[in-house]
Amino acid sequence: MDVFVKTMMDSFGPFGIAMLMFLENIFPPIPSELIMPLAGYEAAAGRMSIVAVIVAGTIGSLAGVVPWYYAGRLMGGVRLKRLAARHGRWMTLSPGDVDTANDWFGRHGVAAVLFGRLVPTVRTLISVPAGIARMSIGTFLIFSAIGSAIWTALLAFAGYLLGQNYEAVEGYVGPVSNTVLVVIVVFYVYRVVTFERAHASEFKPGDGKA
Image (cartoon, rainbow, N blue to C red):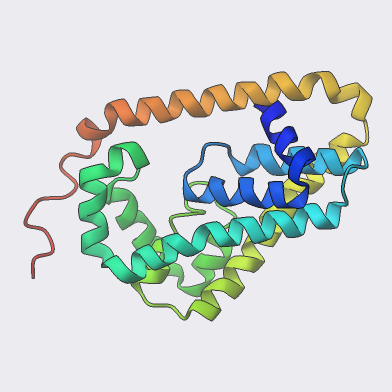
């Protein structure tokens, strides 16, 4: 998988990084924890600048959360939970996940958008309650951009510093990234297989009719 990510970066440069980060936020086939360190690693090898890496990662990540914001804004909490109940198996999104994101946003407000971007389990979902609450799109984008920039910079610099010992670690990057991918795929399959049993009682057909 690291070969695919590196090929995207080598072929499209910063645009490839932005595209990967966009997809990671829409549906996470490759996690940012793999994309951005590898991008920083490539920057350390002299193939692009670390500034371009961080900017591209931030833009791609920001673009990826906007559809989730509008999903919450246009659908509302009840319809989104109904969608999760019907099709959440493949999205690995349950009605309970929507409630968790709503609770997080309710407790922390605007700060949830900023700091939620730094928490892997709520990074994408925090956009949904922001849309449901009809937070100003300008405010949402500003705080999301700040949080995304911090997250991508931390990961990119980790890869960049690792890349200072390029020759020493080059042989480990592939196996480690492939192991990460295998773990993610196994976890996804587990979520799909156990989804209905684990979340069947979270949303009743009559919920939210009022």
